[in-house]
Each structure stands twice: as structure tokens, then as C-alpha cells.
Image (cartoon, rainbow, N blue to C red; front, top):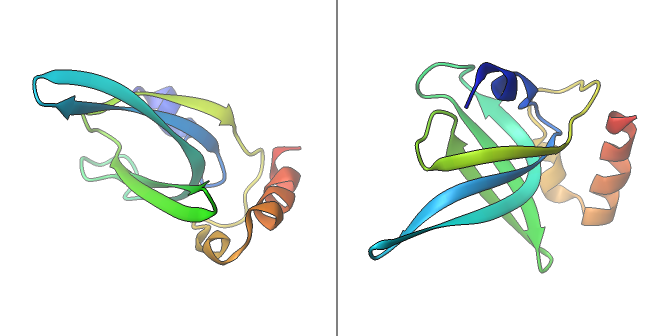
Length: 108
């Protein structure tokens, strides 16, 4: 990831993360689309970010290392203009409809 992408990677951003997956000898790319709810340890080698998505009404979270070679690319679908919290863990307890209502205010 370059510095521009790392700078855009904020809590509240809707992203599509393309990751490489090994199936035996084959390698393929799969997307995971969701909301960044946390980012930890800045830009150091152990830095990571957490992406949360709701798949068939079940919450799924994935933690990705920022400097992982298994990340192909990150597409930013929406980036918040202002965010008041560094961790959005409270979104875990809300239904999808309420999450959309809360985050809609951030993208304006």
C-alpha cells in the first residue's frame, strides 16, 4: 500500500479489500466489502485495520495487516469527511439500518 491509501484508511470508510487466497497450486483474488471500524498502530510494521460486514444478517469481521503481501489492493467506496471516534466498536451492537443512518451523516 502506498502512503496515499494509508492516509485514506480511516474508521468509518467503506472499503473493498482484495486479498489473495491460495487454493492448492492456484491463486485467486476475493473481495471483502465493509466498514473500517478500527485502525491500530499507525504505520509501523505491525499496523492493522479491522473491516466489518454484515453477510446474511450475521456480522463478520476481518483484521488485515496493512503491510501484508496478501493484500492485492484496497478500493475506497466512501471516505468520511469528519469522524469523532478512533474506534467504531459500538457498530457491532446496531442493526444494519441504524449503521447506515449513522454513517450517512459522516459522508456529507
